[in-house]
Length: 118
Length: 115
Image 1 (cartoon, rainbow over the protein chains, first blue to last red):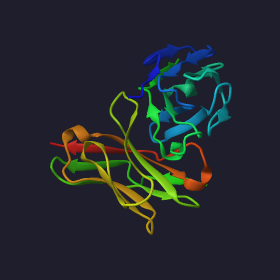
Image 2 (cartoon, rainbow over the protein chains, first blue to last red):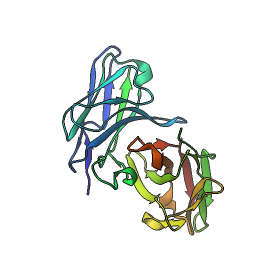
Image 3 (cartoon, chains in turn brown, green):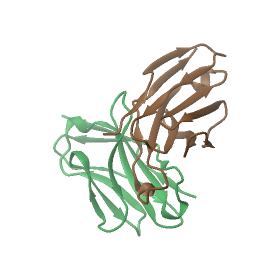
Image 4 (cartoon, one colour):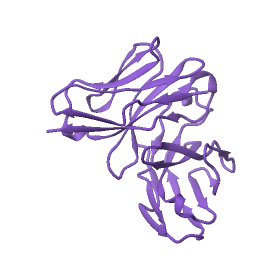
């Protein structure tokens, strides 16, 4: 089974702090994604990556950055945390485009990090 | 552009009754369609997908979904609901023609199964 591990289940940070959310997957997936989940808004894509050192902006990248130095690890960075970034953050991975079945392969999600910024 | 709509924020059903969670989509070409479930304090889990072929797709935990191209729908169904099915359900879509672009998710439907 694919395992996507998010390093923290709960985090409490102060406004202005730099925050790192870590995600590791163990199935050699090329694609990795960061979403935030808010009530009534569903899942919104922040950033994604199709390969090491590659990144693409999603729908709501403002206030965030990412790092992908190794294939298995995808980090989300809040440069200066603000209260409106209080949310559930979900990491996911999937097969890359070199596999013909990748376009219909499902995402595998971590259990999420619930971040509170005070 | 791709989009997906889940018209109901909440669905309530009695245990043992059939359940339906609705999803409609919009793509320019043909769709890949997915259903995911989220239990409390967990990430999303894959339930089933439609690629092509048979319009009735069977998935995990006794769930199935029916693809209807003319109505652009992909409703999730189960013949007999369990209390343990209570969760948040997400529909997602990707257009065949969009390549390896990320899935687009609906806003989710909360299912409550009442004993």
